[in-house]
Length: 109
Image (cartoon, rainbow, N blue to C red; front, side, top):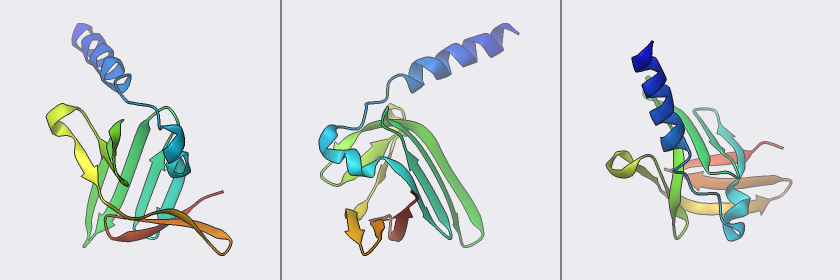
């Protein structure tokens, strides 16, 4: 029981280390989807990513570490990953789209 409590405490502390999404990047906040990919970015800086590529499932959940231009980093210290944003959030007709790691995503309303 004690190891479980310690693991929970560590997880809560690490989650709290995320940075809220800055006002100038607020368009990134929301649930973004494509047939093979899902990306959730919350205002408080939590990120959840799932992708199916060539039959392999990949997922990342963690705190937002910050933005570098249009790209953003998620994770814990050296275990972070950079999401490459080729096309930042923009309006395309009635949809809001962005391209992350080569995949065009549509924001759910």
